[in-house]
Amino acid sequence: MTKISVIGAGNVGATTVQRLAEMEFGNIVLVDIVEGLPQGKALDLMQAGSIVGYDTKIKGSNDYADIVDSDIVIITAGAARKPGMSRADLININTKIMKDVCEKIKQYAPKSIVIAVTNPLDVMTYVALKVTGFEPNRVFGMSGILDTGRFASFIADELACSKRDVEAMVIGGHGDQMLPLPQHSSVFGTPLPELLGENVIAGLVERTIHGGAEIVALLKQGSAFYAPSAAIVQMVESILRDEKRILPVSAYLEGEYGQKGIYFGVPAKIGCDGIEGIIELELTEEQKQALKESSASIKGSIEYLNI
Image (cartoon, rainbow, N blue to C red; front, side):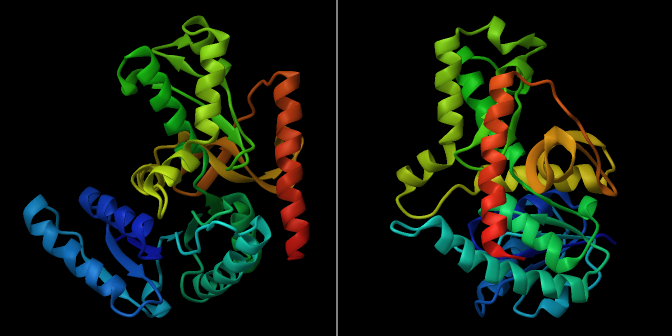
């Protein structure tokens, strides 16, 4: 029986468990350091199964030993950036959390595939790689699927069409330096630039870049969790069903896109072995320069960590 562990019982983690349970992919363990929190949410979700109609077994725990022999471990644990908190502060706090979590993964689930969700995502995924010592294809981050989903949603709204017919693409760092690619986005096969004017596309791109911040501003407290959890489940599905879907994820680059030794959002083939290939897209000179600037920020954070 497949075993999936989710570290962190906050909104993202708990909603991810709900979606996974409804898909009946296998047994699930929800881990958090707060006593009673994962146990209570797991019990609630187990009882929901009788109503919704799933038989997934869900265990809540404060003990990392319960993730033993997991096939996939999803890390959602971490602090959110608060008003007045610098990027360096967030990196310091979440690096400590990520190190602790990944040491436990290395101990109890050494054959697992690890999906990092903690922000700043590309940097934290790098920390996960270094601490676990796993092969890069087994450690990657959820980023581009979420960003792409937002871009696609805005495109569909603008064109008043079904989201099912929109294919969007966003690459680069997960944050203000992400790079939506209009020329690689389409609606039922028609390239986006043939459907919308430059100014409209520029507005959609800008809204996509600040999509997460827009939700944070509206919520006042907390951040997005419905769309992030949906993105995580799409990755898990491609792994467990060996679908080999081409999905934008934060992957470890070893020369692709002119980058080496960092995690970066790029389209990749996702199958039972994790990342099974990276797709290199043709970019304009302006986009290449934007990617260099995005990667420089990530490299700076990695150097700051001195891991």
